[in-house]
Image 1: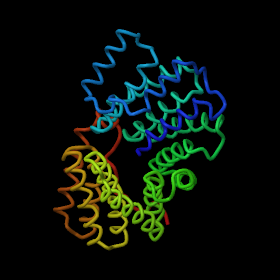
Image 2: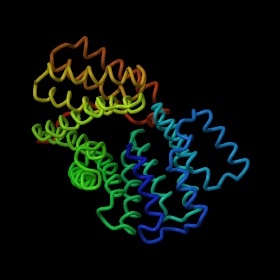
Image 3: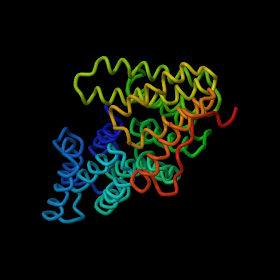
Amino acid sequence: MCLHLIVCLLAVQLAAGTSPSIGTQDAGTAAHVQWSTRPPDLPHMTLADLKTELSNLEDSKGKQNPDLVPVLWAIARAYQEKGAYLSGLPFAQRALQIAREVHGEYAPEVVLSQDLVGELDFLSGDSQAAVETEQSAQSIVERYLGTGAPIQAVLLLHLGNAYLASARLEEAEKALKKAKQALTNAFGPATTEATEAQKSLGELYLKQGRYAKAERELIHAFNFHEEELSQSLDDASETRARLKMGQVQIPLGALYTAIGRYGEANHWLLGALQCFETQLGRNHPALEEVLVNLAALEDARGNRAAADGYQKRAESIHRASLGIAHLSGVPLPQPLKPERH
């Protein structure tokens, strides 16, 4: 189960009486939250169909009706899957604005919308905005559920990732360790949810120069997703597992580059590149990170021609993505490497 769906499901619990009342919940609100989390046809609609659905709802119910919120979420997610993070952000922000106006500040819909806005801020390169947004969502949940709730673990993971991108490593470690423990308690150790935290911790430990700890977290995460792939029942679950494997292969390749095991680094990074090209296409912005790490590997091996080729390709994708995936001032990602020892 993907993490944003877990947040949705937990928010339903939050609104359904498992915690003190949040905001102004009425019958219409409850139905709205349920519709956004049960298996509807909405997630399977094309982006064009989703926009048509949004327009129809605006015409029939008005532009501030709460029934627009799950459609706005779906449109934002559809843009996210295409790598058009900035294009999706206004739809997530609009969902947040409607949720606040209709339900008040302390409502599950607000938490869901804030988390989505924070995720898109993070992906588009505005890690500071992501930190602030995730902190706000976290404070709402803590106020009404206290600490230790599963939904808080998911938000802690996203907050830890934002700290990590901001080079706030001590804060990232604290948040990610708490997230891993809480996700393990809620869902079990051998689950996608706990493994998400392991991947992030592996990247953190790499940046801290704690190579053994990084390798342990990353190998465990990769092995889990590999097992997940072997048990895939349909194309969608297979694609998700392959992408998760690719995401772990990047820090693994960077780790082995850092310690001079270049053959292993090449294996992991080329695996990630092939995965992303196959699943996302050759020009998806997600390729930037693997390409700059391949450039760093080839540079370390003394192969300047290959390094320049990977670097130029990453720069080309990045330029084409500015204003669509990334903010105009966001630089090309840097290779993963230790920031301090």
